[in-house]
Length: 139
Image (cartoon, rainbow, N blue to C red; front, side, top):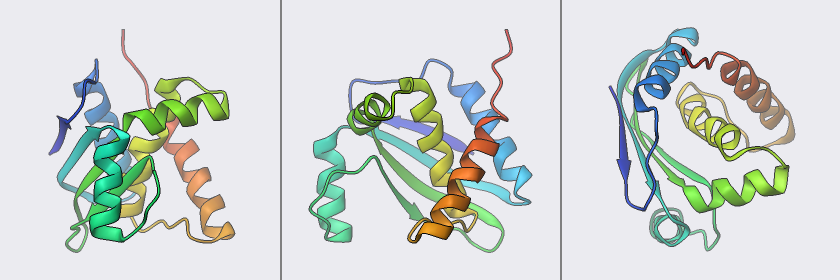
């Protein structure tokens, strides 16, 4: 089950569509969907988590805590809406497109993809693009 939680003045307009897309992403990686919680917050909230749990005194757009067991993906994904907006501006993309990238980024980490070196970061970008292309809003 994919759950969306809000610790700031933000909410997704289309939770069901996004949850269905993320579920399809998980299946496309031959994984099982467990309990994945997205927590949307602001910079201050995520900075505190970054300091407390990772000892990093920096702002970030996403922190994921992976509780995956075997092939079943489980975890908590914290997303700073402020960072997503700033990154969207910096990369000259829409907020919605950058948000999709961050949403799928957390799931891809649970699938085993890393981004700590140049080669793995390139693969992560390819996978993000591949999974974003799976997103379709039915009218």
